[in-house]
Length: 201
Length: 254
Image (cartoon, rainbow over the protein chains, first blue to last red):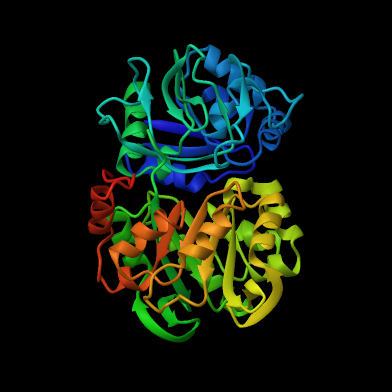
């Protein structure tokens, strides 16, 4: 199937492209609103600063196109900052608006733990979900972030703990997002991407 | 749920080949970077670091080509560096497929380099690499591949680097590097206590117990080694199983 990877002007797209490509998906990088409107499945990868990310989306006029596509039922997978962008706002950039598809705010990791949270960590499943199908309990995923959304948000499907329980997997109808990097999480990460592709098909 | 301690093999490359020096001098050919990267990815490495140890201007395109080829072998995080002097150098390495970039000598000369990279790519993409040697004055930061003292105190520089936006510290003990006498746990613990970001210990790894010690008394978040893995003396998988059997949280499944 064809997956459109959103290029907002930064971020490591090649590794996401390669990971999806190795699973047999046809990928294209999209930068224009009309390409998003025409997409049958979307991936929103992201690294860096929340402000640069949402500004990058706004500048390219992608915000409305993305919101419309998601409202129209197009399957989307947000990765790392791409998860945080689905929320209303982030403490990393007060005053900047996210996509506001999940009405909650992203917060800084507490100061009593190492930040950024960098490395491999485990998940706690909170409810039945699609992305973690067939993945053994206790599997490790690669995280690299300094901000996170509280796991108490009702669309959280799996949580991770680092200073506080935060949303590691979010599923809200056709909107899916992960705080970790599946493209950097070895074989289990690849399985997450495969689960998304199979479900999106 | 615990954040796993990471085992990170390091490839020092020169002109497209993996090399290994002893105490920062005397290079030996250790193999092909792509082959080694693929092997470590398969054996369960938690990350891979690739360092351009010559870092000459004319060798730049060769290094970027190596970064590109190595990136294709990996589905784990990938850090690259060596000779990063400007924002554009960091950008080139990340565009070639690395997830993080390391800075060393140029950051000592111009610490703003750290903030420039962190602002552009995020702290999680910036690793401050420090080569440290014990001198009568204490633990001192050395630059230019360990050849020259910077006159800076290691803990001081680590704190400043983190304040400027470094997301991790790669801490190499020059005294231990290539000597196979174990990590410098005292140095590692001293720096780890000073900063809020993960510390990767490097220099001196030989036995499985060296790793156990650096994760215990050294308080390291990750441990790096090169020659013991290249020579297939130890497989990463066996090392991780040993650490798990001794109660260290490591990622065993892939």
